[in-house]
Image (cartoon, rainbow, N blue to C red):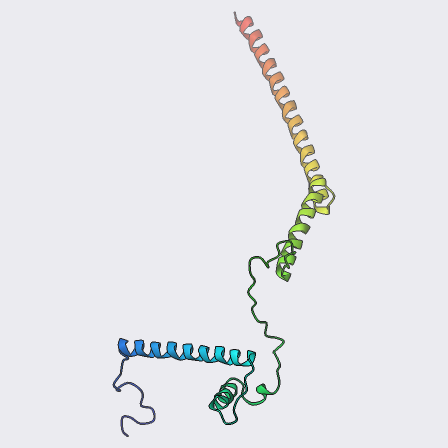
Length: 181
């Protein structure tokens, strides 16, 4: 089977590169062509604005027919319909922009703002002690406070008891020390 068969690829071919001069020439041709088309469009617009009597068989009609067929092919030339789904970008001047106009928020932005407001309302109610969670927290705090007070009383009693025992022991030692003398 020969090398350049069906599965043969691009791998042994000679590659050709475009020189910078050729690229420049192509760019110039493109610019000239666009400039020429713009001039024709402007001339066509000027002709429609200023009605002139054309002689039958003049060459300008043929070029207009070619331009219109190039622009609109098929049914496009007969029916003028714009796609309602396609929104054309309209640029506004600074003087046309209205600052007073309220900004339309997207659905996500609205939901985010609503969520933040709901959270703020909940925190206010929570701090006021009106929510179920806040009531449970306050009840838990009250129980803990009672337990701590009881523990503090118990410590105080134990301390007093130790002091009394220590005082009794010291008194007993004092009596013993006096008795020994």
